[in-house]
Length: 448
Ligand SMILES: [Zn+2]
Image 1 (cartoon, rainbow, N blue to C red):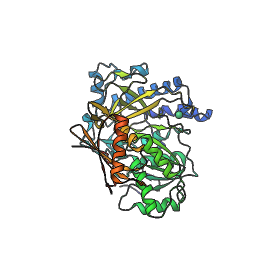
Image 2: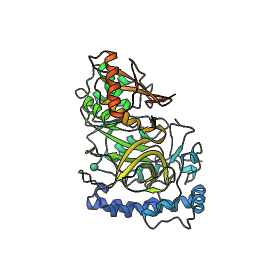
Image 3: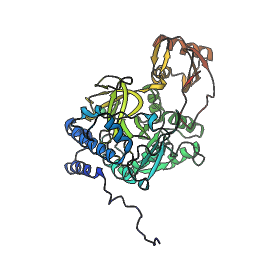
Image 4: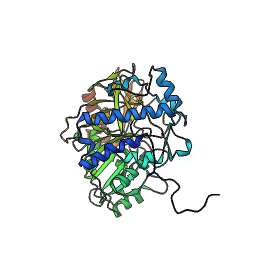
């Protein structure tokens, strides 16, 4: 019979896993008063190699799928001698783990603390199981004090989904536990948190940080005016972190103007957690190299690509015991650069180019929807809501007028000639009103 005790059933302080040895690295950084972000690349590289080898050994010992894949690829043992050798470890495709909640599990199911699911917009969901130590100990080891200036004097509003997926709870834990920041858990338009109440709460508590998606940041700004709350005056944010959907720089600049604060992009996923985030220079994302090793591969051959070469982003998690992701093909496109950033952070810079399946083929040329959005957002007379409709290679743009004196006909012509000028593609433009707003992921591209 279980007896009453005031002690917690689970203790993560007395945890032991393959990751415990990495604490020495972070203890030393603490002692020296240094942040991982500014270490010489070689020092961080040594840490990454050690973390990768610990992960390879862990998955080899505790997961049949990983072990068979590695032995089938000719690996005699779960170890590499240099980071370059990571390419000898097999790649992990989404399709292999879709709909299978056990395949990558590397701990006894009793030790799972939290399960997250991808939204499953493109097929069956992907399940990710975390131990409590994953989320409350190891994930919080690297702090990135340059990239996250937030502290216990901040109030962070989290307007991201808390259901199923990682973002809401992930940001909540990061701010609460790493920085001691108070949280307003707004979610994204759930029935307990309608937009007006969310805005009132942000105003009442004087939120200083907002973590949300690009489309929801636009929606909140738009709605705040309807409820008589002025962004930048009644709610004075210091910064907005955008994640979940990509967007163009011009879309971001509009948000900066509307909210009167810095807007930074954050790149992460439910499967891999944090991956990269923009610094104050906004010249790409610094890879969070304490958490992940990022590689770029040729999406067809799978061969590794060097700096400045565009390909598919592949992620290996460094601080996971429950379900480590080893060489996970993200389906996202981008390229890496060695950091020469003015901010002084030495972690590689990632440039995102969108998702593979979302590329739009117009007259034989592939366009990223973000590039087209960038061109569209250059026109101040259109709103931040639009659709790109692709029908047999023909592009139709639906959008709304925004604070403009132009008639619909004049605006349509302005958009058409601007896009023709920028892309060389002649498209059809339809000016509408009341394009649907969404609390979920905004649908920008419609293929017929
Ligand atoms: Zn930088």
